Length: 152
Image (tube, rainbow, N blue to C red; front, side, top):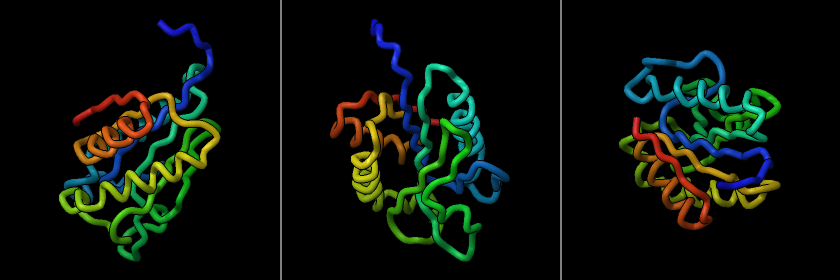
């Protein structure tokens, strides 16, 4: 058992769906259901723990006139310890989760590039759903960071 008292930096990954910190578009389509609410609620709850230094929820950046401009913002701060980070991968447009698979390697590469420019690497990666699980496994194998997976 670790005796470290350093607060943790957690990285949540949820790639598909339209994810933002307010006015979730629940039920807009098959990809904007309970998972988007769960991961944003988890982000908020984890950030309230005194054992957490930072928690980031990473998702795909979407730049399209067909959706809110919120999804094109690279960062959305929810609190002093939590934020949503949007990483570019694939087309700018919002696409269904079934079409994301060809872009998951690019997402992983872009996320790793972003992480390499952060003050520290995460202590734990928590991936949500199969697409993020794929990215989480690759990222964990590259970095050695422990991975937690929730299949939803």
